[in-house]
Image (cartoon, rainbow, N blue to C red):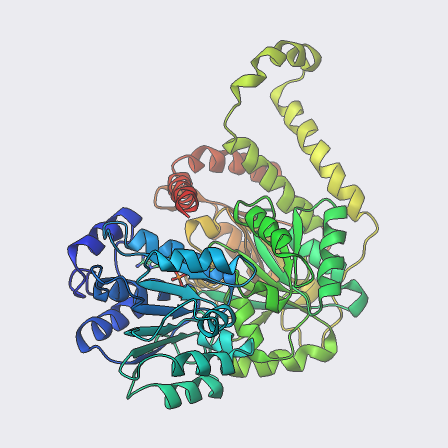
Length: 574
Ligand code: ADP
Ligand code: MG
């Protein structure tokens, strides 16, 4: 693994890289940067979204620009206005210590004269959408005749959006000795054709395998009957209180309708589709970026510009027609080395579509059940407890405390907690009262159905587990066969899993006094009754939960705090 310095980057860039907190190059950066710096060749680079492609071309480009010349030397074509702005902002950060280099963004939906006047002041790098720059070329508002580098970013998206002719047109207006760097997540034949027609003996590099999804994304599907789609969506949201997601619908109408229903039902949701004005879209994206919107319902076209890190879930409310679209959707999560989940809500007749997606993305989907009311209540209550524990006390409440204390006088801690939890519990319990199992009975369930036992365990995603690694951990600790633990469901700070009843005692025994890194790992039966085999949560369970709380302090909180502080910083910079 090379360092940024070893890749050949100059000091002024290295300083900016340190400022930004990048410690080591991503794979695509490690592969692309030396080729672009040293070999001065055309390049086709294939890598999923979120792998750091902007810096892979941005660093070498900045290093190669001559700040003394005021002419346009580098042209970056990108599919949407949002991406143009994002790239421009990133380049500003990368070039923070390189005075004299100017980058201008050129895109539709904003004043062309303003953009032209910025260009006249001298810009060595232009980041443009194909439509707008073509317009500017034909109106002679920009001169790209002395361009040395042309970068096609998200080439597959640009072609998907019908920019093929524009791109050909633009490229034919640039000098033939220019170098072309093509970056793309997938390699459909249209992209290959561009490479063939407009590039000279390009080097080709690939990170991951072509046309497959990010390695950090787990794929899940849920089979429901068509009229339960919306209910299923809500339950998935309720079972993931910290969800930060994009929900894909096929039509603008569905997108608007689902978003409105979610808002009516009290979720922090918003819609993003082509019938909104640019201004409305900007407002929605801003709220999404700062997390006021937790569930962004979007069409595929509108979502193309979404380049937000930390999205936890992509939910396919309906499956897209094209598998490639699925790859793009799921690529919205699992970015920048984080893990993500792509969920698909389907009806029984669509199961075969899942199989064909699996073949193309070369990853298996996990079939899961829409969580039932008890599970959701349980998750919500743990979430509440966690939130209470981690809430910083607001000093402004001081004046009100005496009155509140008066009212609550004489209630002891135990009882107070019970009451507090009841308040929250009743909300969900009453909503879910009399609701049924949403899962369509499937043909290919593997797990033990009614016979299984469900468990709670006090480790989760925060401790670095996903369902696969937790399943592996359990299997190793318990010395079990592959299928004896199943339905492993990892939440933020805790998880659930199921087992055959035959190994119940073994599991409880193994984890009765189990310590990992000085912390008690606690397993208890989760569901009170119902699926058979499970007894009620006994006294012992409660006691050990207290012990777990006591230990939680030096668990994982530090890491998380740092993480979110870093993200906040980053957002501020943007
Ligand atoms: P892509 O264009 O491949 O979708 P981006 O260039 O938008 O990916 O990068 C995704 C995120 O990762 C951005 O927030 C970017 O700042 C960050 N990033 C890029 N390179 C690195 C690195 N070497 N170390 C840490 N973070 C990085
Ligand atoms: Mg990008």
